[in-house]
Image (cartoon, rainbow over all chains, first blue to last red; front, side, top):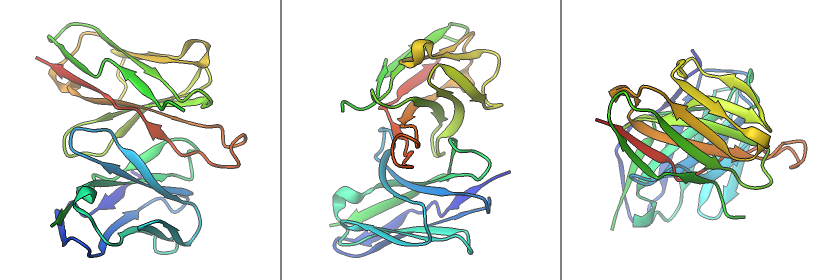
Length: 112
Length: 118
């Protein structure tokens, strides 16, 4: 069973702080990694993707990938109340070039 | 780029009835996916189309479920003889062909169809 694990939270940070969200995956052949943001009652919105080991930055978001440790993370700098949402980690496995396997998501709350 | 659209956004039906959902992908995307999401869980893969060909069906997709993508454009997902356990958000996503998009194949989701079976 290929799995993606996330801390369910809730993770609570003050406004302006750095929020750190973590994800581990079991399939060593996984090739592509995605972070989606999902507001309550809405559909997932793609915010970051990363394919290679290392860091990838986009505005206030940084994705970090370590394939040897089978670990991917998302850092949100200068957190805003509007960042309060569930963050879903998704992995595209080595045996599939199309199917995403999602974690259960981490609920982030940014307190003003 | 108008994004992925889904219709209807909400559907309430009685147990035993049939329902059909529609998805219109981003116009230049040839790959289309259906997922299902229940409360507190991440989306779960149901099926995948490349153009008009349905290339994989999850074991979650029982014989009461059928999906089509005629002409490789919009897709429909039909659930026959609905059960209360079918209540969920049904999500459609699309992505480009990586060979045409420089290797990029990110999936973009539509707004979803929330199904409630009473």
